[in-house]
Image (cartoon, rainbow, N blue to C red; front, side, top):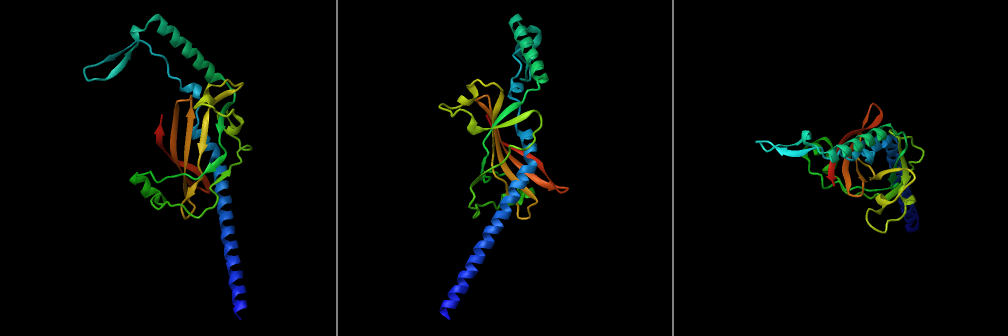
Length: 238
């Protein structure tokens, strides 16, 4: 009788473990499907053509009014400044017409994000799972996202970060010469969903030019049977 009970207990334990693993697999596949659906919009929302981020050169001198507001007086521009400005404008016009693919280095291994630093009360009311976010028993800490077959917009093209030369020094990736237009490096985290699977949150970062970059918390939601980017909150800038 005791042996029979042990067998029953063992079978129940196996069924329980199997059911739990099956649930995790279903949830994991759901997460990957949502990421696939919103990925092109994420790239559009975060990435930029870094060539367009170069500001125009100074044209004139800075002047301060009585209220302390600083502005640029272009009527006092020097010949050298005018030459530099015309060159910048000509380069900008060339870039705007350029139809070349803009390559973004992307790390396809998505890891869990950490959203605990968010203290925005309004966002917490709209997304209550932010308040109760804790590490669950998900054994999958990171996974490789299959982005290669997805169609992107705005001439963006992703290239696996591992295909770039390994950096010996910080920001070396931005100083190397490429036979393509290189714009920056994109990072994304895994998605954390609410219990109803109607909204989610993930972290993102985009760095460019070696010293510039921006970090975000991205809120997504299901709208009319489709997943969309709902709100983007900047968390850091450099």
